Length: 457
Image 1: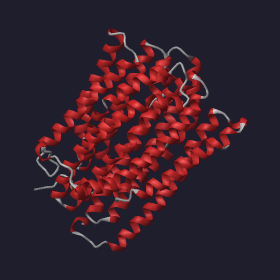
Image 2: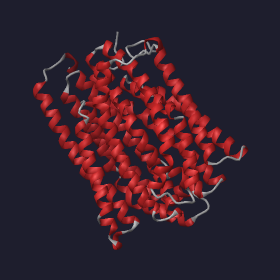
Image 3: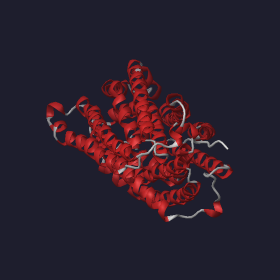
Image 4: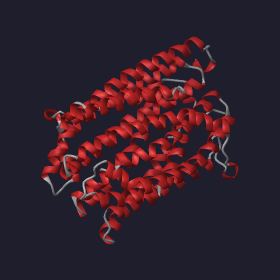
C-alpha cells in the first residue's frame, strides 16, 4: 500500500512543497482574516481604543503561550521522524503523548495567564485608557486557551502526516462561527472586547474538536484512540528536547516584542491603535512565511528520518527561494496600498492611520528577511537541532532588539518610531545568517554519516 508521506521522500520537490504549503497559506490567511474581524468589528461598532486594546495584547499573550506551544513543534517533529523512518509504533506513541501534553499545558497557561494579565500589562506601560479593556480581553482569551493548545498540537500531527487540507476545512467552520458570534455579541448584546474574546474562544473550541475527530478517524499510524492516551516517556523527552528550546526561542522573541510594545505604548494611544492595525496587516505576510517554515520543518524532518540529507538541503533551498519571492512581493504591494488597508481597521482617527503608515513603510518592504529566517528555523528544527536556533535567535533577535532599545533608542535624536522599527530588519538579517550557517554545518555532518537508501531514488 502506498504510504501517505511518499511525496515528502520521492519525486519533484517544488510541486510537492507548493502543494503542501497552499492549504497552510489559506488556513493562516483565513485565521488572520477571522482574527482581523475582531479588530474590524470593534473598530466599526465600538472605538479605536478597542482596536488598540485588542491589538496591543498580542505580545503579552504570546509571551505566556509560546513556551508551552513549543512542545507542539516537538510533537510534530517526532511524528515526522517516525513516519520518515517507517516506524509506525513510534508515530503511534508520539500521537498519544501529544494530546495529554496539550491538555496539561492548556491548564497551566490558563492559570498563569489569568493571574499575570494585569501585572504584565502594567509592566508594558499599557495606556491607562486601554488597560481595563486589554485586561478583560486577555482574561477571557486565556480562559479558553486549552482549545487553542489542542488545535495546534493536533494540527502539528496532521501536517507531519502530510495532511494540510483538513485544518483548512475546520478553520472555515470555526472562522465563520467566529465572525458570526463577533457580530452578534457586539451589535446585539452590546458587548465590545469581551464579546470578540468570547467568540474567539468558542470558535477555537470548534476547531479543536474537529481536529481530534479527524485523528480518531484516521486509518494510519497517526490514528488517535482516546482509551490509549498516555504519556510515553521516550516520546515526551524527545518532544521536550526539540520543543522546549523552540518554546524558549519563541518566548524570548515574545519578550523582545513585549519590550518593543512597551516602547510603542510610550508614544500614546493613537500610535498604539495605528501600530495594532498595521501589525494585523503584517500578519497576512507572516502567513506565507509560516507556511514555508512548516514545509521546511516537515520536508526536512521526514528526509532526516529517511537519511536523505541532500534532499533535505534541497527542500530548504526551495523554501527559501519561495519565501523570498512571495514575502517581497506582498510587502511591496501592501506598502503601496497601506493607507487604504489601514482605513479598513480605523475609521475615526486620521492620526492613528498616519502612525500606522510609519510601520508599513519601515517594515513591510523588508519582511522577506523574516521569511528567510523562518524557513531556516524550520529546517533546523526538522533536523532535530532545536538548541542551535534557540541560541542564535536569542542573540540575533533579543540581543539586537534589546540592545537597540536600551542604547540607540534612548538617544533623544533617535527616540522615534522610525528608529524603533529599524531594529526589526537588522535583527532578522543577522539571525538568518546565523541560522543558515548552522544548518549548513549540521547538514554537512549528516552527509558524511549517511548512506544511500532506496528512498533516495
